[in-house]
Image (cartoon, rainbow, N blue to C red; front, side, top):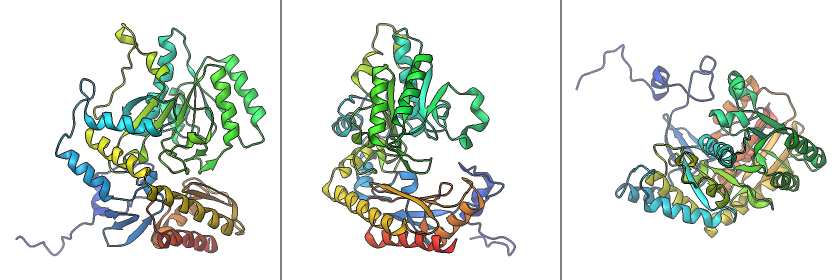
Length: 431
């Protein structure tokens, strides 16, 4: 074996990372380092130096059953021995068929068709295109969308268009589709919103209304009024405006129900799903829709078909992970744990709400959030200091501006959850 020269040294993963990689949502000039994670199990991330961190946001809301869940990885391993990948345009397979059957059982009752995508942004992209082409196929040109203020729906062009956070969209705003924005319902502004929506419907040719049901994730886990949302959806139905629920973040148990749309009487025409769909194991997304939407694409004219495709659509391995995740979601153990975490959040919310630097608190299901009573830039210095503080205490929490939020895996134990709470409280006492 060759010996290393004295001036040579073995580079860490963090050092090697800097040579070629470009990370998302990162200004490398200001933040050149990325923490190297070498192992994950349950709720614990382990870095290359052996330090452990509780993953208190489920790695962007994906690993809700814990990292490397044995039940899911075993199912995926079995599938890998049978069928790894086949194009989905001309073929079908058991995992895709089985997943569609299992999803339809738990989705809102009006959903009947499953269309496969790669990620949350492309699930939204497909939903937007479905709405536009639905009316195009009916020889009705509708080109405008309605969306909530401060919503976030992804980073592809259609998804960017309907998103309202300019920090993500600034350089591209001249190239986006036309969107009219309305405030989220807060229990007091319903009449004003309905009047504004009616005016838009009378003035513009609106194809669809896209929304994050109940909770706006990237806006800071902001919770809005379900009754008000239902009134908006009902008005859209009466105006023949298609409704698109972006459940990429909220879907699969996080809000205390399988889907946030369960809390609203008027169901969406189209639903976008990803993140926890495959329990964080592999990328996949789905856009579901009603039979009425699907039938608008049936024709002897090929051009009226939905010509939208991804190479890895309905990948059998991803489907097998999703089937296992859907199965786990419905177990009494997971459902009981969701209720326990929700109760713990309510208890912590009551405790921390009186803290002098806490402006407001809220929780829904396994999601908890508090707003600091201070002005902060979304990616500013104080936010960075908070992030470093949390990591130094062995807890991965990623503030959204002045919002500190929790979205823990369902399998977190009480000791780990209490450490998350204690670390937040320590941070509030420190900063």
